[in-house]
Length: 108
Image: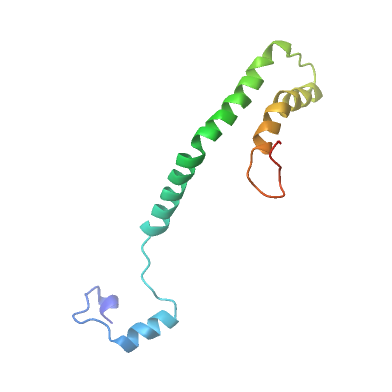
């Protein structure tokens, strides 16, 4: 009734009412906790994998720009073939370095 009139409650809820509210799923959840966890997770990924990711992206961009002198596009098929040609070897390096078991193996 206090919520309907815009007033604040004067007393805390009893233990029984809190338990009933929990059973109904009415639990206070901070919106900052998931955002903070995501932020710290991403920071951890960049701290541990950042240098490796930077190295792989540098190779990818160098591979693309290293082959720009050979561009000859006359049809849409040529554009698709060019994209495959430019990204083929750099993407092999990136995928081969992923530490996912069964998806890609590291080079021996």
